[in-house]
Image (tube, rainbow, N blue to C red; front, side, top):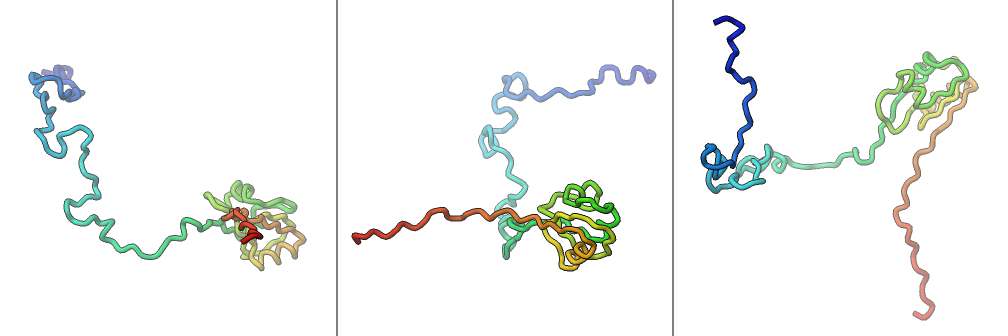
Length: 169
């Protein structure tokens, strides 16, 4: 025997178990599911990992208190005036797309907030959803413009108008 004949006669892939193909196959009649019982019928899967066999599930045992802001909270990217000064040249227009291109605002967000940390040495036009008081003062001191992007309009909750009263009643 040598290394060239070691693997002769050995199949690397095992065939799929074919159940329900007659008694002679060894996996006929009940198809290896036993007789009767919860898992004997088709479509009956094993219980989920959450089930604990008679014991109350962990999800139901844990107390649930409070609420989450996640349904209505908005996430803003925060950028300082000093960082904008380093990355943009005089006369540029700075908005969310430009900040993302320069790598100052990463990730998905609902808008941009400009804060006043750092110094501004150039005249810039900055478009953002919110400006801090100090950032606004620094931008206007250099002759730049700070354009506030308005928030989206709130949906109209009830469009129905009350009916006018009837004269006869």
